[in-house]
Length: 226
DNA sequence: GCGACAG
DNA sequence: ATCTTGTCGC
Image 1 (spheres, rainbow, N blue to C red):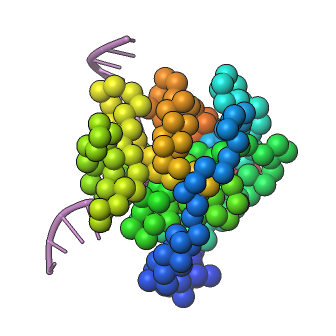
Image 2 (cartoon, protein in one colour):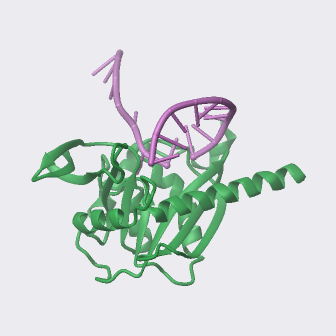
Image 3 (cartoon, protein in one colour):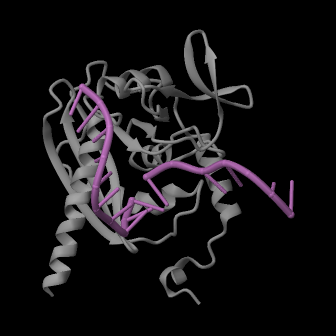
C-alpha cells in the first residue's frame, strides 16, 4: 500500500470530475474587478517530494514592484493527476494567500482556468474558493484546438471559446490564457499581457515561482543541517 | 485499444 | 513539478 496518499485512497477521479463540472457552472465570466487595477498577485508552488510549498507575490500593476510576498508549506494531499491539478495545489495556494495583509485586485494563476475538460481548472477552482478574480496562465495546453478567429488566436473546444493562445515573447512558445473567475477573457488576456516583462511568463507568476524555489532551497539547506 | 495529458 | 551541463544568444 502507498502510505503517502492513504488519507485519500477513496478518492474517486470520476467524482472529482463531477465536482469540477458542478463548480464550472458557478464561474462568473463577467468583469467584477476594479476598472483601475492597482495590485496583481501571482501564485505558484514547488515541491520537495510530497511537501508542497506555495508562494504568492503581490506586485504593483504599473511598476511591477513586489509589494508583499508569502510562502506556506503543507503535505500534499493528492498526487498529480492531469485534470485534477487544483486538488493538489489549492491547499498551499490558499494558505499563502491568506497571509496577505492587503488583497490584490486580481490573481494570476499558474495553470488553466476554464480551458479544462470539465470547465474548472486550478485558476477557476482557486477563484471560486477565494471568491476573488483569477486568470489562468498555463505554459502548455490541456485541451482544445487553437483557431484563428477574427485575427485572434483562440483556444476552442466543442464550438466554444475556452481561452486564448497568447504569444508573450516573439519566437517563443505561447502561453494559454483563460478565464479563472469574475473576469472576462478579453480582460484576462489584457492583464496577462500587461504583466509580461522580459520573460514569456507574466511577472507576478514568475516572481511567485522564484519565491517558491527560494523557499524550497531554504528548506533543503535546513534539512542538511539537521 | 491508442494517444493526450496544466504543474 | 523534478532531475540536470553545457551552450547559444541578447
